[in-house]
Length: 219
Length: 212
Image (cartoon, rainbow over all chains, first blue to last red):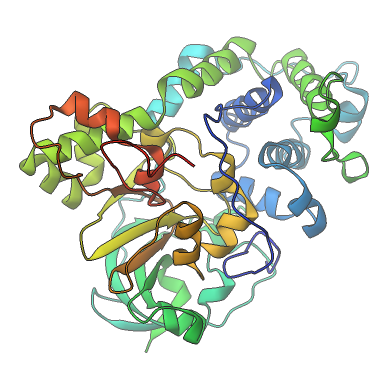
């Protein structure tokens, strides 16, 4: 979807402010909502693409105003309500509905540590042919899906070169909407900075974007 | 949900718990009561990212690459395996690529679409990395961004920006500074900053470059 999360190339966002000796979490609640997102993921009611999409659905003005972990709070609420783990009424009343079934067992501390140590690989060991090879010129499709995509607007309809084949990965455009993993090759595509930004960019510079097979066509 | 979104003025009255703090607390209680989360799991996750998983991990990887040419080759050709050799890996670092800075090339990592970052080696990203100013400008004006971090790059140096749009996470292997020839891995690791491994800083003997 063409929303404000896709901000590569925008102007006017202000200076970059680097905080000295920044803590991992600025307040206790940031750590708690971070951990809740990870722990709730273990119920396997959604996937990483769906959770990114939940945050993209935050209306643009609010998205820009909210801090990172406020977005994680909004996103988690969206996910648990949509997946029917929790009702909107329960969130509002902060109490479980009378007679609602208690889920068991929740992820414990040991399982939580095992979960982050193992990770959640997005690579799939399936034999899917690569439509492009390293060194090949490609053009990105000029596509504007209203749903989730990982092809940024600044790199649509642009010419680039396949720099590296990362292997076969889950396709976010379908996976975010529970329409299947549709595994396909992901390539690092090298774009000359001037192909993307014209004379504003330096001639020698480049931007490398990781793109799925389906985003590309032969140049 | 959208009618009572948290406001941005919480820093103006820190003594009062912010709206977000209250809402998170209420959500945690609800999820615990429903049996959906176990508080000890939350405690363990917070502790892991506050104390165990952070940029010191990445610094050890970099220091080893500087000290051991065979390791460096493995790191550049198969980062997942080389990083696993050091005991690191897992969530948000399942598929790693390491890009090397040199006298000719400077690499810079960003995630324009969200805030993807290699957690096992760098920990959770700092606020600036997740913020709109960095995400919007790193791809269109990398040299201007680097200047804001105090890094002026010569015109003939090639800047390569890596936008983490997929599940591959990038780590920059910074240049080893001159004057560190006699140093062991531990001493070298102490010099390596998070900023240098994202590409917004360089490693220097005095660490002056990365201090903002």
